[in-house]
Structure formats: structure tokens, C-alpha cells
Length: 313
Image (cartoon, rainbow, N blue to C red; front, side, top):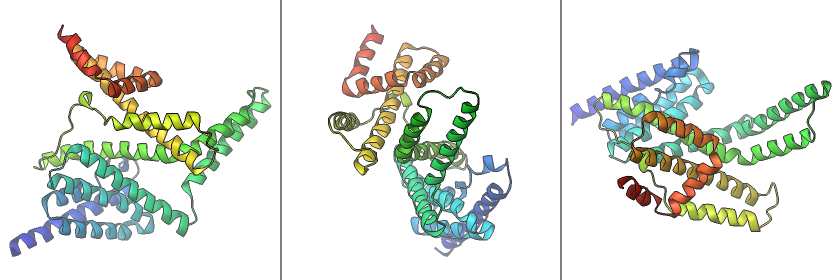
């Protein structure tokens, strides 16, 4: 037992030191930080995957505290993002959770961390990143409009279109943030897991993307949202309006991913080369409404069984 505790303390001190070095490089060294910022969470993830939760939480808290000594208050947000991220990844590996669980828990952790920092920024520093973004976008388009006016090339209803676009941006920012956070979480997982595997850990694997099937409830939620937005007149700017617009955005994004999965499934069954999958994925982005429709068809009907029978024949 004493040997195990000594091992935990020694390894924990090493991981905190490595975390601090990676955070310092990411905070102070330009260009190189584009690489190191993806690996700040690695030491905490490694420790959490090897030792019990209580010890891992202690190491995570100490690591966040170290970020203050490295770069002051400006470095603390960086520590608050990466240390909990590493803990969640390592804990999921230690408890042998699936990769889907790992993605969801990592995304939620990152989302909660960002929300806490957003609230602190608004209350403590009176800085609202969302309002600043909207202000910058408004000023940019107003300057563009003024420049086009000098050349008599201002499109008709330009300022109204800009106003509508900025209003829509302000409404969908929550869903944009959620989607972006889960994409970033997916990137972190796919970068860190191969490294952790090289370090001797047993890491979970994703099933092939072509076999992805979202719950059918996603389709029902999407249909409910569409029916409500079609038959109920929601006042712009209200909370209900914001909820339904964001829900529609996220559900369309999920159905879009389902549509691409169906395309990958079809290409795999046909035995076509990998370049065909890449080309089809690019076209899926270009023809996004049709890809969403494919996702709806895939969830609503047993189309994959039909494709299997066709490819067998």
C-alpha cells in the first residue's frame, strides 16, 4: 500500500509538471502552441486512466491551480478547459466506457467549462463575447455597405438583409457553439487516444462511421419542431423562438451526419474506392438539403436492408 501511494504521488507530480510545461508552451510560444494545445490534457488523461478517481481529481485541481502560477488569471481559463478534459477522458478509459460515451462526456465537460468561463467573464469583467461578436459583425457589414455606396454598387435592401442575417446569427449562436464544441471534443479524442494507446493503455474504438444509426427519436423531434414552426406563429426574439430555431439547427445537423453515413454505407456495399467516399462527402456538403433528406429517409425506413439485398443481387 505505501508503495502504491508513493507511485501515485510520484507519477502525479510528473504529470502535473508535464501539464504545466505543455500549458506554458501553449500560452507563451506562438506557432508551436498550435500543436501543443492539443496535448495539454494528455498528462491528466494518462494519470486518470491509471489511478483511482479521488487521486485523479486531486491532480486535476492542482493542475488548474498551477496554470495561475504559469500565466496568472489569463492562463487559468486554459487550465480550466484542458485539466477537466483530461480527467474525463482518462476516467472513461479506466472504467472501460465506449467511445460514444467518451465523446458525449468530453463534449459536455467542455461545454460546462466554457459556460462557467462565459458567466465569469460577463459578471466579473463585464465582457460579453457574444455581444462583442455581434458588434464586430455589424460594424464590418456597415463598413462594407459604406464602401459599396461610394462606388454606387450597393445591392437593393442591403442593410435589411444584413440586419436579418445578424439577427439570425445572434439567435443560432447557442447551437453553433454546441456543434463547434462537440467537433472540437471529437478532434481532441482522436488526437489523444492514439497517443494513450502508444503509452500502453487500452482505448475504446468507434464503430465504422458507415454503420452509425441515430435513435429514431431524433426524427420524431425534428418532425415536432417542423410542425410547431410551420403552424405556430412564434414571435421573433422570444425565448420559444430561440429554442425552436436552435433545436431545428442541431437536429438538421444530426440528420445531415446520418445522411453522410448512409452514403458511406452505400459506397462500402458497392465496393467503390476510398476516393469515391471522399468525393461523395464533399458533394454531401454542397448538396446539404438533399443529404438531410437522405438522413430522414435512413431513420424513417429500413433502407439499409434494401441496399444490402440489392448489392447481394
